Length: 267
Image (cartoon, rainbow, N blue to C red; front, side, top):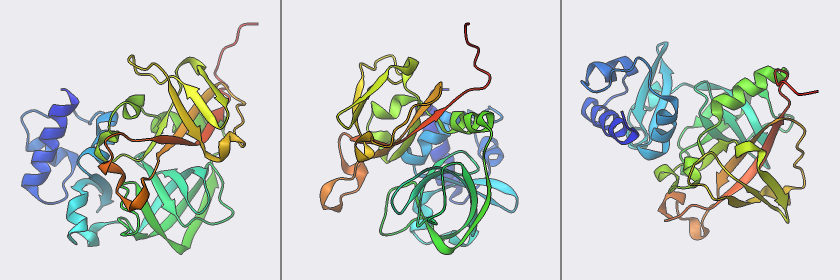
């Protein structure tokens, strides 16, 4: 099934059900959705495309639409805490992966947190009025518990591969609202110069991207075989929502560089 057909069918069922439902309930309401589990990339695209929200309720993962919560409905079902893996720490916020390996922008963050820390955090607002970007979550300032740090390289690579995405979002209008992404440059074809990075993504149509790097790339250090770029969509002036732009400008927030212990090298 193509993504467009998948999107239309999921959106139709959620609109008709008009309540949070599980994937099995979605499948039971459709003659077209037969796969046991949905394709991960399709689910990633739905976050920005239709405002898909997934969370656990009564030990089950349910699917819902952001619009419902913004209208004040079903907010009591949202979890009070989230478990998050920090991928990159910036001034006042961090980029993190939730338990579904979805990218989130979280704030505020404790000063001592670093990349690869796993935390459990209390949620102040899933849809903060001051930040309408779909991945942004406001945390309770005094309710963040450090759980552990992901130290093993193999574990870090596994996490990076789970959150890494196709570079398609760099060639489109950001899937109607996507503002955070992680992708791998193709064949390590990239280089940094004058505060920018030139690289090729995995799309066949890609003729190269030339993207600004946070802080001019001064903190970038490439030490391993596996390289991933974390990107954010640049905000537009005058407070306009990012998805009102016809074309989205991206910048590289951080570079994840890892050495793969399983990599075979010729001697």
